[in-house]
Length: 584
Image (cartoon, rainbow, N blue to C red; front, side):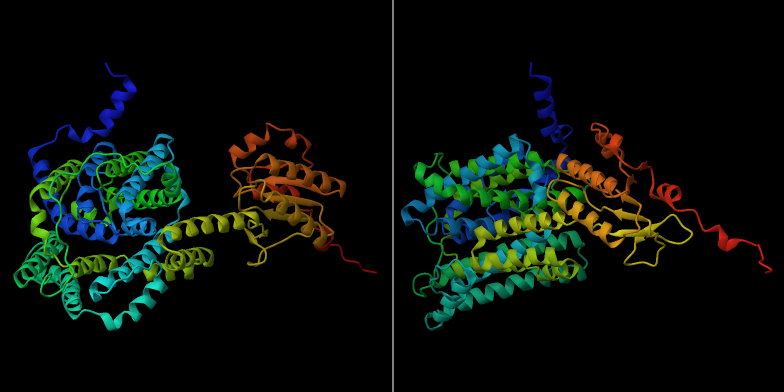
């Protein structure tokens, strides 16, 4: 008998199998066929983008899909080679000797998977909260632009080995005299066809009476037909031989071998930092994609299971001849649109890719690299989102600065450092803002119980009673700022006899902040000024009762700010209302 917790975990993971019906199987099978059609050219293209032989893209699309289906939490996420992770892999192994790049890519995948699995076992899914959406959006935009530049070499038919945007531009311009017209013709025509198919074909199909869902699916499957035409033309005209056009060439047939890369301890140590960066990007990108499609069906994604699923997929990829991978937005969208319902889609895609590895690789021999580059470029065009960076900038300068810095870091430093720059800068700016939280003096709107910033609104204020509203939690980093703010108020209002700390936004007070409050209370008492607290959250008040601060408080604790003002406001000068008439 299995323990109850283990049995419950198994039932939760494979609950989709209960009541699995023929209708669901039909939907899953249809989705698997469509996803496979899209995956075959993509996995070849992304392997080449990573600077690896094309068969490694196929290898990374078989057993890793099985691992994710067994451990992941999304019903729609399709894991495998993607443009961003492939570019990061290329940046990592580019400086290594050519003979060690394949095995190093496998070791990188194992390290990436190991980190994600450890994080999953430690329930570290909350790490997702530290990566802001502006950082992710700007990073993807920068990486997409970098990928487009990196693939331009295949469109022009020239060599290119640079890893930063400006070096790529310089080298591409210097190589213009060596451009191959046939590569430009095939690559340019492929880009045009891919764009037209993506933009116009769905509209034309809908206008002809086809349902929008099927029109979108057919348009997503159309690129495989374009690629098939280019393969046939290339083979018929011998473009790879007589024409001198770069083609895919021989792709070894057969299933991937199982082996653990033996690169030695020093090499593993050198791969640790790149693996950490890839692990962060893979987790954030995969989880964001999984959450997007789960929300459309009112489902949820377990971030800890995503860590395990994506981690296991990477580890298996490294042990079966592949390289690092993550969840694909485009293929997951196809799975969702095609009607996929369960993780069984991933298992069927893995089976179809295994058949491809066994029997279909000779068909791809004459496929021009310029066509694969065109496929990558068109896919990355949809990832460019400069509008998001601009909207972030106009809404928040701090977030906009973070997004812009992330984007520029990808272009200048390389794709592997961009996300780290964004995450670190976002956290630094957040900490910087929390060091000086908003603490305005507030007053009351006449005749109401509403209190607002005195420097922004026409509100009633009293010279002897001042209200300081604290709009953030108090902790060791901003406790001194509170002391300085109170000291400033004391110096500016010499007639003050009471100070109220309005704690509406305070959800936590740590030990350092408590010490500051004790010190503020002592200093104000020495000046004959009473300190009061109002609008305090119950959880904060309960924690303060664990200390003797409230017993030594010179003033009172009020349930609401208005209650405090009613109690503390001075009596009016009744003499001005006297009806006595001086007849002298």
